[in-house]
Picture 1 (cartoon, one colour):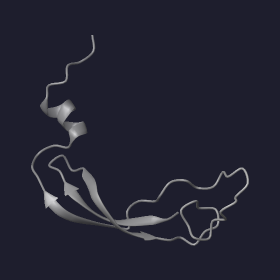
Picture 2 (tube, helix red, strand yellow):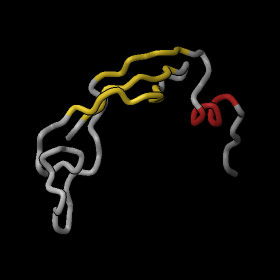
Picture 3 (cartoon, helix red, strand yellow):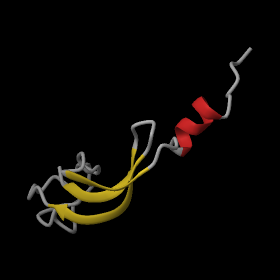
Picture 4 (cartoon, helix red, strand yellow):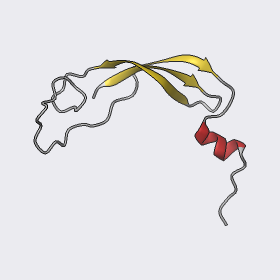
Length: 82
């Protein structure tokens, strides 16, 4: 499973949002669709399609604000369903 090295923003809620992808780290696995070893003409491809967790996350900006997802639930007063 290939990974990325990224830069991003760290929010007050603890989430990290990628703002820039710096580099892909290749896993050299023929069954990973992101690898250079994956065949271009893979028949009926059921290979790994997702990247692994970021190999390195460089925080370029910190903010006390919540991310967009958490803002709705914790800051905007989302009401309970009745």
